[in-house]
Image (cartoon, rainbow, N blue to C red; front, side):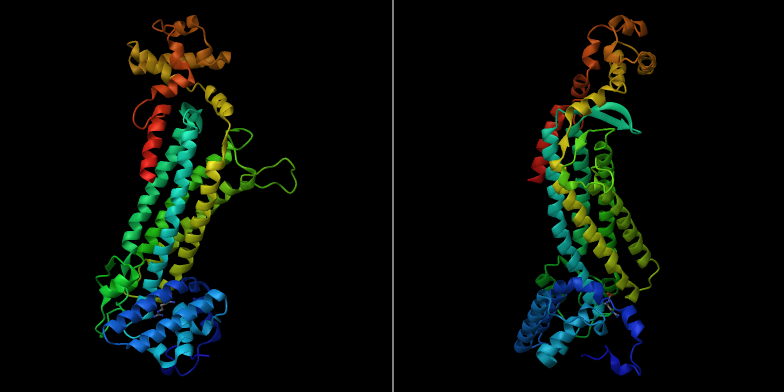
Length: 458
Ligand code: ARG
C-alpha cells in the first residue's frame, strides 16, 4: 500500500533482497504494545505543547487503539515494505485516520522511538521475571524448611567433604538467586530512563516537554544527552548480564539435579511430569528439564557476547547495527522466563531420599575434620591432629571401617588423648549440629535462615 519510506529522495526502488535483508518487522513486531504506548504518550505531549489539537490527538489515540486491536485479533497485515514495527503501525494509522496520522512523527525519529520501545519492553519483562524469581525462591525456602534436618554429604572437588544439611544446601541456591534479583532490580533503575525527545540524535526544534512524556510513560528520569539517548544499549547488556549470571547459577543447580537423580547418587526423585522416557530403553527416566536449562545457558552467554560485540566500536550516535540488538535480547527474555518457570514448578516438587543422602554422608570419612577439631580441643596443634586423623583414615580405608566404627582402643592407638566422648563428634548429627553459627549448616541455623528468608520475601 504505502510507498517506501523517504521515497522522494530515491530514483529507484529498493532491491527486493535488500528490502528483506534490512527489515526487522519479523522480530520487532513483538514490541507493538510498547510502540503504541510510546506513540500515545508522544501525541499527548504534542497536544499539551500546542502542536496537535484536541481532535487530532483524539483521532490518533482512537486510531492507535484500533491498530492494537487489529494486531491482537491477528487481523493486522504486516508488511516488509514498511521495514519495522514503527513504520508498520504508522502506515496503518494513516490508512485509518488520514493526514493526522502523518503528524504523529513530529519532533520524533525512529531512533529515539526504538530506544524508547526497547526500554519499555525490557521494563515490562523485568516486571514479569521478578515474580518468577520470587516463586523459585519461595520453593527453595519451603524445601529448606522441610529438609532442615536432612543430612547429606557436602562436596568439594565432588569428593565427600563434610556432612551438611539438605536445607542448608537449598539455601545456598536461595542466596545466589537473591543476588540475581538485586542485579535485576538495579538494571531496572537504569533502564527506566526516557530517551524520547532525542529525536534522530541532536534533539528537535519543537518545544517538546520530555518530562511530561516521561511521567506519562512512568519513566523515572529523562536521558540527559540526546546523542547518548539514541545510542545507549547498556541497559540491554546489563539485562543480558543478569540473565547470563542467573543461567550460570541455574546450570550449576541443574548439574546437581541431574547427578542427584542418577542411579549412582539416588539423592532425589524428580516428579515424572518433569522427566521423559527413552524411545529404546524402557527403564529410562531422563531429567530433561534440568539438562535443557543447563544447555540453554550457552545461548544466553552467546547473546551477552553478541550484544557486547554489537556495541563495540560503534561511533556515535545511532547506527543500523543497533537493529541487531533485538533478537539476542528477545531470546534471552524467552529463555530466562522458560527456565525460571520450569525451576519454580519443579524445585518444591522434588522428593528427597533422606536414607540415601544419609548413607552417602556416612561414606567417605566425612567426619574426619570433626575428629581433628576434637583433638585440638584436647590440646593438639591443628597440624598435628590433621596428621593423626590422616593415619586413622588410612587405617579405615585398609580395614573398610568408618571412623565411628573403630573401637576406642584402635582410636587411642593413633592418639592417647582420645576418650569415649569421641563418638559424639563422629556422628553425622553431631557433626552438623556443631556448626552452629550464623551461616553454618546446623539445623537450628537453617531454621533461623529460613525465618530470615521468609521475612525478606514478605
Ligand atoms: N528498526 C530500527 C531498529 O531496530 C529502527 C530505527 C531505524 N532508524 C533508522 N534511522 N534507520 O533499530
